Image (tube, rainbow, N blue to C red; front, side, top):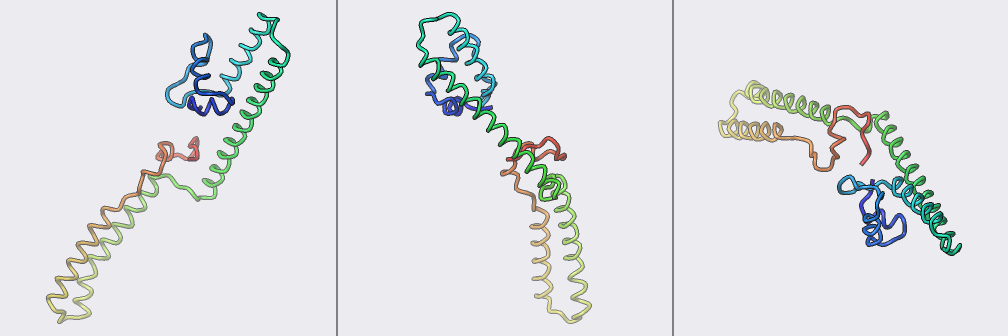
Length: 180
């Protein structure tokens, strides 16, 4: 799926040409922003070219050859793009299998466990200090309590930064997810 500009670049024409093509009956309709399909447009161009060839016999063979070459190039670019997407999917699947990626739910749960563990260790710190140092100054106890409270609050507020993830990354299953 591509935007109007990407389609124009792909076929080597202006965006205005794409807008003019949209007015011709049968042109594939965009499915929202970035919703043009290269393959559908290529088929439409071939169909239009075939219709024009059968209806108009006066066209020069040079123009026909240029159009055919343009269509062949568009199809080659489409095949290359499909290959690139397939390679990207395979690389992503490999990274998932190598455990370089993990579902956000798993990461979040792990962070929760770490924060609970750290909080209980911090709670146990002051009694252990009092036992090891019975005449600990009250100022030191107060300072330690403040540091423990601050640390617990900071650890409790740690969450993964989801701004750099795609919507498909936030799903618990790694199957069907696309690389970013």
